[in-house]
Length: 622
Image: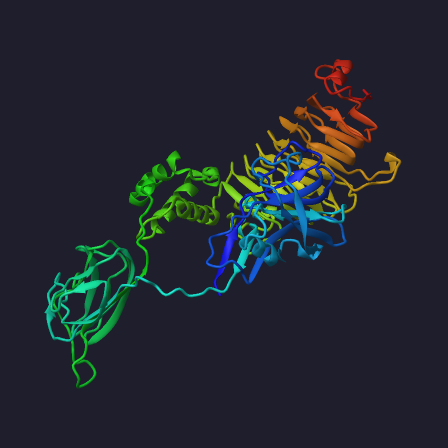
């Protein structure tokens, strides 16, 4: 039975909390109830391929489960969308109508990081036979409490892409135009170097022309042809199939031994009138065909068999520069031609060195027929990009094994990523929970730890999970928490020019009063740490947001801190504060100026300091 796998690139989800926002750019489809997005509905546009049937044997929707909240199974309902929509623009307020199909799957925590199979055969057959128009699928969560997040094409890692796998029973259709040919030589001719074999007999011929005792075979109709040839020679030899006096790539075969035979095979793209010959192209000398090998009867010393296996193919002319490129420089210029419309987002994110490796792969992997369509080229480009190891852009995904840091084979731990990344490079931390029991030492100059949506570090030991000892390090986009409160900070800064941007750090809930809370902190700077930057982070449910040790300098701006005993504790440091705000439940104090801290700038005007930070509640203990 033929099986067709259909990609589903056009996906999004709808959020009742953000009813005007489109989320087609997200790496995950949210289904269910989320604290931020509230009610979430996933939508998928599904473009069915042209099939020779109006009913399939099976249609299975394959989705990867990346996030699952709650301990009870989440009942995910498959709905038939009843109105057209555009995944790139649709919002909660413009959502299409949909009706439940009766198909439901329960998602459990054991399904995390696996692909679940959902039988949608009935729905696909209704689309195929015209019962309903195909406007795609909506996924809803019937329990109204839990949330499931499924992977989309934006998650980058191809095994997590959504797919529809269709299996059907095909009815063979006899070909109406199926040229074929077989010619052979049973003489004992000697073929000189660069000479072609004359064939003494015609076997079966249809749509193929050959005159007995000549060396040329003419193809009458254009098409893709499979060609086999055999040679039995008395000397070691090599023969090559020629098409219009040009050697066909991949058609040279030979033998090191005399008195032996071999068979060659190749697929060619032929135009009507093309001429084929079998030539002694690269042998050391003349080759005598052997028509008596192995017995007393006259045998075949050489033959050619061919038949048409498909219509002729012609590469899209827009790909001429791509198909004619001879080196990395020419291939780079060719694929970056905006007229091709290639998606170069991931390619452009690579270092120049990694890009060159990808371009070399496009050159060496280019089919002899060339890349036929822009889609073929895009697929080859995506594969090469996913498989290249770019030391300036190392990939990490929770639970991954046998990784090498590429998109296709990410490392399983953040430490592995740091060890592999080049100074100044980026460790891309994929969605998932990273359980930490040994310290992560960020010790390379200028690197960035970049958390993708859903990347969470979960501390499970009484240690400082992240120690930054490399200068000019950036940590961005991570969620960091712990299973229980530990008397440790989550991030310790021990190097200059460190940036913490857009991270969320919080601790487990602790019962009041705050005086009895375990002293857990989001961030602590070491003494005399220079030029730190904390920007747009969120800290909550901690004893302290940040403890700023003596001599620390830098800027703390636009952060949100709440539900702490002290948001920022300044201990003889010199950091500036601007634009910070305070959520609910409130902090006991937003900013605390500890004894010994300077009364000079930047802490000489407490009223202004409060105003510049959304009326911060400041405890001045100087």
